[in-house]
Image (cartoon, rainbow, N blue to C red; front, side, top):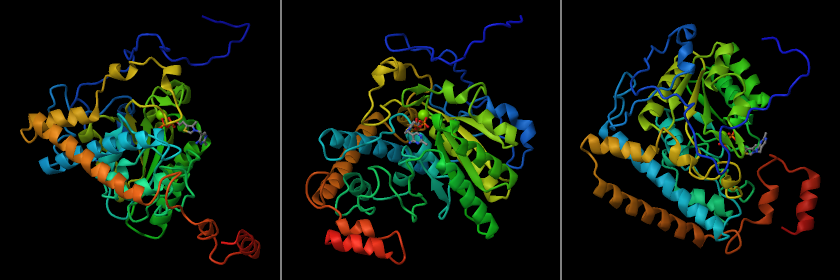
Length: 410
Ligand SMILES: Cc1ncc(C[n+]2csc(CCOP(=O)(O)OP(=O)(O)O)c2C)c(N)n1
Ligand SMILES: [Mg+2]
């Protein structure tokens, strides 16, 4: 029907607001094992429907099924479970430390642990992530010391970044974790540029770009896709769709494209959606994308469908913009519970061992916290020197900074 006349401005609205009943009936969940696994050299035009489906391995009974299953051994899966449990425990302690005034700020990963923990295991040494603040699992799963992370969070005398970065904005070249930029979506252009440089210099290392659903609305996301597709940059383009960008629901940044993965199709980039709460599926898809990059087949865009169970940050209160029980209604479940059930089903884990592991992990996290607190917290103990402000930027300090440092007497 024609509807000419007075124009109406369209603003997408979430289905439910606080006080309403959570409703995810519009999220279509394909059966585990039902999405095919193409060869890595597939013609992108033939797999466009993968941008509208969800690759899943773990079914409702905890079995691993279908063509994306079978890549990980029992030991690797047990290790993955431990990484996710460690990240969850670390988050809980640091969130509490923020409430106790030991740090000014914290951001949790609750519900999204599988994404960064499983992805890390698909990379090789030397590969480089350009992460946002919600991928600390990349460090945990690569064995980066928790105490060093805590020193950074506390901005204490042992903080490797010397108090210059917001808490949780880690950096470790050795662990393939590029310094986090608070300016979201910059990760995309930087990762694509780094990947192009790796190809130009005939190196073998690949890059991984990270972005949240909301931040895909930034122009950096789109310009990075142009460069990645034109130059077939060896990069994995990760979009973590956790349904929310602080108080803005994902429908705003997604607009009319149907899914975030579909954004890649206009660039001719193979684009897949994966169950972000399924450790096995995340790992299998990440591995597929990394192999494409490593074999000069170019970029892959991966949308992880997940849910941010916790608040956006320690400064946020989600009850102001979404129903309280919305996370319970999320149809893809909890990543730790799902991997635990799978391992029990495989006969290599049990509820008792799980409870015991939880206690052991908590003890390890508390021990790391004690050690970090010996070096100081936000308002107590050792701090980086004011002199550090002047170091590490210029190879040769310009005269005006030298003067300022003298004036400050440091
Ligand atoms: C360029 C830019 N714009 C705005 C902000 C403020 N900001 C910080 S987090 C955030 C929400 C991001 O949401 P999303 O991309 O979905 O990531 P999530 O927090 O859900 O992981 C915003 C708007 C920012 N850091 N950078
Ligand atoms: Mg988000």
